[in-house]
Length: 569
Image (cartoon, rainbow, N blue to C red; front, top):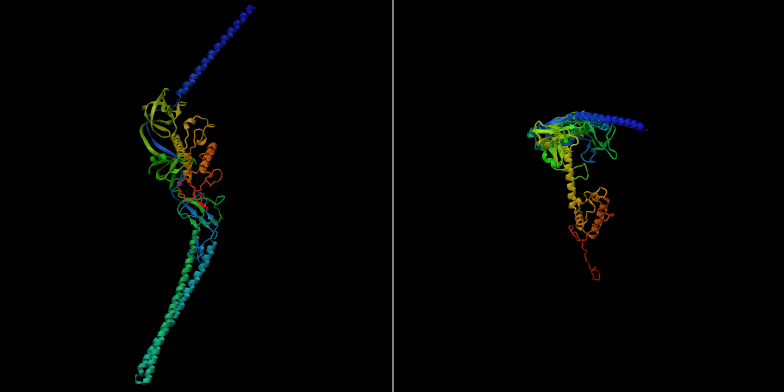
């Protein structure tokens, strides 16, 4: 029995020895493989040789493409023939519905003088034909009047000659009567006087007929001028209802109408002065940028810039700053943001067929140029305890001093020398330095928070932020309210004073209730401005004032008047 046990024990010892031996060999093999892989990985780490270089320090912002020159094309609104005032004579404003009979294709580039839109003017053409017939009639009447006056003038000239002959004949008869009796002489003298009177009468009649002829001829001329003016007016209207391109540009139809805006189509009858299209001139393009007002001191007219279209990111276009707005404006990215921006325009050096108004772009304004400086990639730098560091090729960590930077490169002021080898992308080391945009965003958030704190302080709200800083979000103070806030009477009076209300007990009570309710609901900041009606709902204020009180008074004193018995009420 004992020998069997000894054999079993020897067998087990041999197996255990083999198992241990195999385990040791396996561990060694795995270690060797791991070391080889790690060596390959270490040898495969990308490094960068520190050297002198140059780069542009830029300010990057998104932008929108716009045309420097564009024109809104509207439906004409003009006066009809016959007058220059509304309802004057047969004229007035042309209220006839005009149907669109031709439209230039949207998206095409038209040249100056090309037809954009044509309206139906068949009624005007008919009226012009009628006016042309009237003009021809007036011209015929004028010609007939000329011929008639010529014949009348011949008749008048004969009448003048007859009058002159009668006078001369009477004079000769008077001379022959010198040897006649006195009675005969007097008769001949009387005949001469009668001939002269008849001559004067003929002259007067001829002069009267001449005036009449001139008057008739002047009327015929006026009829011709009126007819020509009418035709010119119709020509003007017909021409105006054919809209031509004032310059070369892109055809872009606009949406209008209510409640569903839409673009005009063939057969539509737009109302007068309705906007039909926009015609941007693509020969001169600009980019509109909104720069944070904290960076406006880094922008100047003539500053160089680069632009990339989001739809064509590989192409770079250049330009110069052409305009900087004088006034800043509130950003439209967030209703509650107090961030102020300044509108800046970048005029591009050359136009390109790829530019379309409204396109999104990315602009880099060149703020500074770094030359002959030690330059390393931004990806090589990481942050430890607020200081910038890099990893050397041998694995050492080196603290460095940084200077100017762009989004991908940074200037080294200290800690490295030309020729040093550093790891290009040291994964897992410290905190990566943010890009210029990320850094700017953090600065903007700091400014917004500071403005928020200042506004809370100006309202007289005392809140201990440090006491509530570490509280969880679900138990912390909502929207600036919480255990650390005190609603003082001075604060309520200042709020009422800003609203132009009197600090009456009723107003103070309602204001306190409103603030407490909004603090409870977490809607104090957003709820400002509600409940400003005269006693309306729960948020109304008592805006009544006593008679005779001035607007700047903050208290109301009731006027004491005696009643009919002499007692004061």
